[in-house]
Figure 1 (cartoon, rainbow, N blue to C red):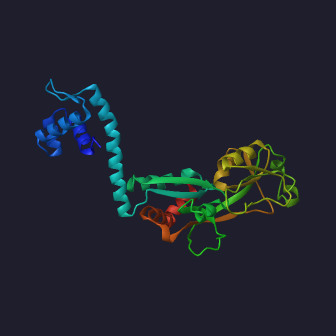
Figure 2: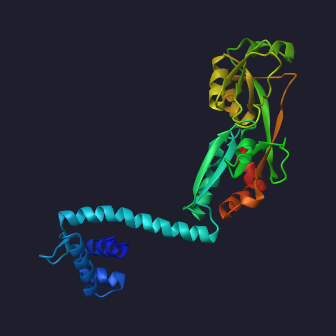
Figure 3: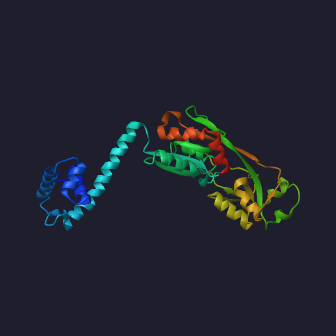
Length: 302
């Protein structure tokens, strides 16, 4: 290969410093060594890289093109060195985290910002899951950590779990829905005649689960909680929502909480991970997610 990284680094430093002398000082080399490197590169490529007529070293048009492409190689080499150091230090290149969508992604931003301050070079990949999707992502190795899995732990010995917290659920209808004006407790016989809006289980390898749906009840299945909220607000259907999601609409008078027989009032959620597959980045998250104050902040979103 005719172009070495050393030659590209020399070229970049000369162009940035403006003179061979200043570049040599920065690189801790003598100017004649830099001159030799550039002359050798020009000879090998059979092009003129610098116009040396003036006091400052000025790149020719070809030299500018070489430098522009060379900077990409220098950045790639620099990133490679950082990656090697990270591998040796035990930090992962990428950490995949699955979270249940009952927690808005915004609830995790403070944690992500704190992580990037400590290790900005590690890539994070977050995926929103529903119902059994978190377990599925963890057990199929699509995720290293699953946040917000329910406590019905699949029978696996190689999984470690810690309690995250509890979320209150409420049964809500639109302010325009016929049930909104109905007083008192609503029986299942009334509810089962209504169309319920449900978010689809994101499991790929497990049998899909449902929650809060009565036998034979008409169902509108959507992909996200945002879609579920939109459908409920429209009056198309009714359904259960985490209180923290429903509360802004309840305060605004757009949704109404109804007392029902089959009320899934409290949902218990946990954090799960593979204890034998944890690098330093994963361990950082596990430590933070074992802190009760941080868990409370995730649950409450503040």
